[in-house]
Image 1 (cartoon, helix red, strand yellow):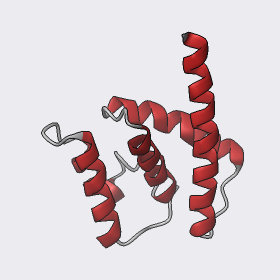
Image 2 (tube, rainbow, N blue to C red; image 1 turned 30 degrees about the vertical axis):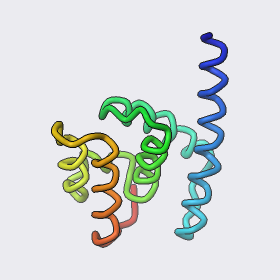
Image 3 (cartoon, rainbow, N blue to C red; image 1 turned 135 degrees about the horizontal axis):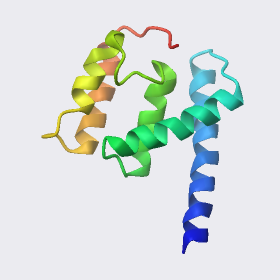
Length: 112
């Protein structure tokens, strides 16, 4: 069973790299693959700490890391994101929807 779980994680990491490359391309940004790989690893751990277990929510979390910064959840420039993520009374999918809504109205700043 552990081998199956590991194979799923390897596949998820690969798909997230492809996704994050497309996010970078859409935003006319270039980020090295090694940095994207590190972002996936860090982001998976951080998403887990916030209780995100759904694959799509983890993908959305990683997207925010690329769009804003790896520390978008604690960075003072994106304090609004941390407030949303740390709200214990809101289900995980609703927190991600709230982040996406706020992302639409928040002026985007370059990351890192």
